[in-house]
Structures are given as structure tokens and as C-alpha cells.
Image (tube, rainbow, N blue to C red):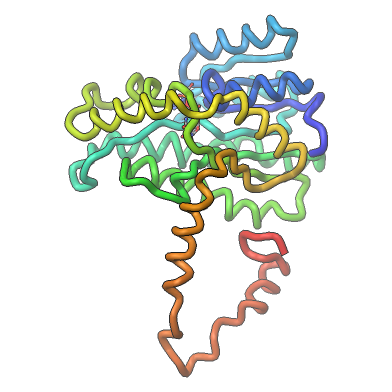
Length: 295
Ligand SMILES: NC(=O)c1ccc[n+]([C@@H]2O[C@H](COP(=O)([O-])OP(=O)(O)OC[C@H]3O[C@@H](n4cnc5c(N)ncnc54)[C@H](O)[C@@H]3O)[C@@H](O)[C@H]2O)c1
């Protein structure tokens, strides 16, 4: 998509942080935006702010984990305009502390919001986007922690790996269609995510390591990148058709270490007599496309 002007975008987690910042950047370039968020009051305020600045904006209350909610949001969105940019971005933090002590409700909630909701988003809009034959763009928000995992929240980190995995698989699936795809891999950004997580998490009280980590993360993230810079970068990537959106290059050195660790672990075949997988044949069987990479 070379130009977002005149397109309609649907953004989950659109009331705050990276979602709202991207909505502002899209609106500034002439796109119409639908902000969808579980926080009804904040999403209406966010949409009203954009409208007061001259944008065409709609605020919708949507819990991205609710299939019924998606059905209603899809209907309202279609009445507003044909969605051509879908930003599946809503996310919450997870628990922390030893994995064997995780609260199972927190675990399920984290996956529901951060990973499973991407399917609902795509079931609601991606079919129409492809069928239109018009340029479209799908963006998922993963995180740098899905490449360089810090020793915090297994739920959060693994749900962000799931998001990256969904994007990697869809990158192959969407090749050759009119819909481009990006995966946003932010580092630290000064958003409300710690507060949002505290407000929404399905257990009332954070205790022990979870409470300590949450407090520490709040002050670390406060010093993070301004969300509007990330939002502008997302729009640039949509217009340039870039798949990877890396906003924080200071993580590259650690990404290289992680990747080198993995590549360095490749050794001889487990079966020295085996001829080796027919990678070219596999690529040919899958439409001649490389897996998860440009040719
Ligand atoms: N802030 C960072 O440092 C950072 C870094 C990497 C990735 N991310 C990712 O960026 C995305 C946006 O988060 P943010 O940092 O802007 O936080 P944020 O809390 O400012 O915004 C997230 C929004 O998602 C909404 N939300 C939460 N649960 C929802 C649900 N069930 N249904 C609909 N909306 C829901 C919240 O109400 C909130 O408005 C998340 O996926 C997050 O994991 C953030």
C-alpha cells in the first residue's frame, strides 16, 4: 500500500499507547480510523480527540477475546467503511515468578488477548480485505522479547512468540495476494501497559515477584520511546510494504547473540546416511515461495 490516505483502518487496543499513536499517525495522513478497545470510556475519548482534530474516527468498545464482540464490531466497522488496514495490537502483560506457580487464569487471559485474538481479527476482516483485490495491510504487534527473551513473564513472552509465529506463517500465506503484512517488534515504549494490565488482570492482587516486577517495569517503561514515534514508523512501514518493523535498533546486538547461539547449535545430521531434506522440493510444493523470508 503506497498511500494510506482515504483508507479505513481498524486498530485493536486503539484507545491508548501504540494503538492510539498509530491511529493518530494514520489520521494525520488522511486515513479514517476505527479504534477498538475494551475500555469503553477511554476509546470514546480517544476517537473524540481525533474527530476534534478533523479526523474521521469511530470508537468501538470491543473485548478482543469475545467472538460475539467481534461479530458486533465487524458489523459496525463495515457500516463505517471498508477496512483495508487491520492492526491487531491489543496486548497485556502477564504474570511473573516461577512458571510452576503461575495463576492459570492469568495464563489463559494473556494468551486470549495477546495471541488468540489475532484469529478473531482475521476472521472478521481478512477475507473481505483479500476478496476486494485492493491494496490492504495487516499488522500484528509482537515485541523484541519474542527474539530476545528477558527472564520475566513466561506468559507474556511466549504469547508474543505466538504472535510472531502467526505473522511468519501468514507472511507466506498472503504472498501473492493484495494484502501485505508487517510485524511490529517494539522495544520499550512509554505506554500505560503496566497500568492497563493491573486494571484488567483476572486476579485482584499481585503478590511476590509479580508485584515487584510490575513496579520495576512501570519505571523502566516510563523512560521508553515516545509512542508517537512508533506510530509514525508503523505508518511508514505500511506505505513502504515492509514486513519487519524494528523500532529499537539497540536490541540488534542481543538479537545477534540469540541467533548465533541457535545457528551455532547446528551440528551433523542425526542420520549420517540420510540424503538430507529436499528443501527445493519443499519450496516447490509450497508454490515456489521461500519460508518466512524474501527470496
Ligand atoms: N509498551 C511497550 O514497551 C511494549 C513493548 C513491546 C510490545 N508492546 C505491545 O504493544 C501493544 C500495545 O500495548 P501498549 O504498550 O500500547 O499498552 P497500552 O496499555 O497503553 O495499550 C493497550 C490497549 O489495549 C487495550 N486492551 C487490553 N486488553 C484488551 C482486550 N481484551 N480487548 C480490547 N482491548 C484491550 C487496553 O485497554 C489498552 O487501551 C501490546 O500488544 C503490547 O504487548 C508494548
